[in-house]
Image 1 (cartoon, rainbow, N blue to C red):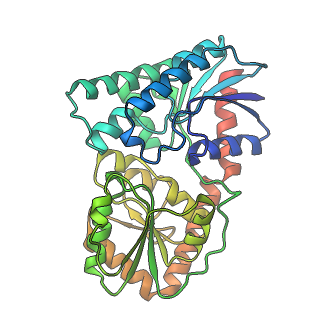
Image 2 (image 1 turned 180 degrees about the vertical axis):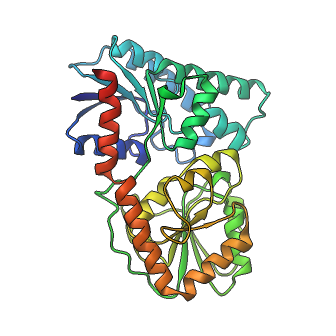
Image 3 (image 1 turned 120 degrees about the vertical axis):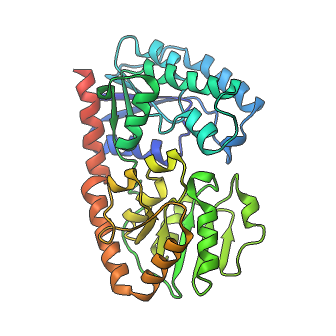
Amino acid sequence: MRVLYFGTYERDYPRNAQVISALRGAGVEVVERHEPVWEGEQHNWRAGAGAAARLALAEARLLRRPEGGFDALLVGYPGHFDLPAARRAARGRPVVFNPLVSLSDTFVGDRGRFGRDSFAGRALTAIDRRALRAADLVVADTEANAEFLAGLAGLPRSRVQACFVGAEERVFSPGWQPAKPFTALFIGKLIPLHGLETVLDAARLAPELRFRIVGSGQLDELLRDPPPNVEHLDWVEYDRLPDELRGAGCALGVFGKSDKAMRVIPNKVFQALACGAPVVTAETPAARELLVDGESALLVPPGDPGALAEALRRLAGDPELAARLAAGGLAAYREHASEQVLGRRWRALIEGLAQ
């Protein structure tokens, strides 16, 4: 089987890199037709006229007929604007869309850049629907998100399937050996989804614990005067993230209360599980698709700093619990979200269309 991975997708973004790696591991030949737009944009939520101009030029280039044959075309993330060119390039072959997010849900519901009834909000919803409907199959990251995307676009549920994000195993592998003192590690773009305020409030409630926050973004202002037990780094190189995770007392997931937060399991949770680090994250419908409280992670109510602080105290004071959660989380990852498992899943979904 030969798959064309197509579009203006961000080549180094974990979802794209992992899907390509998983497919190749499952024996699928993956060739790329990529026009860069988003590379170098650390905060895509600020994208403006410059990005729009680059996007327009990239879409024009994507209209050129791709070289070589393929069995199916897969549009990567972000690729909502790529579907017209993708349908043209596919020439009747199946088109699969890997959207990861809804644009309207991200910029209206989660990040609050636009009002739902504003012109921009309505336009983003229209773009979402048009892109999702243009694909023969949409692959979401969780069952909860698949339900949402199918409802948003008015699609039969059978046209929207789910496949976990997983982690790039060339980078993220087991080896958890926590350093002392216990440190709760938060990695990610500082966007509302992640619940940074909840993490900082938990740090204030548990001043005896150390917190390490790695990342920057929309909510940088919250870290201008952090609690004294919080260390902040703007970022670390991608290949250094496994060392951060393997040395942490635990890895923090997401704690936001938005609708989107209920439907996602972020990259960093899969990466932590793949490294064998214990995870603490919000108890959401999406999290429950993969994790069991007290067995493979500690799950706390979203937006509840008191519950988060108490969970971290439990882990810090009970190394045996931390070790059990680390082992349970790694087992859950291997059973449900390893590259081998996801590669088989992606291949089966695409083969079902290409037959």
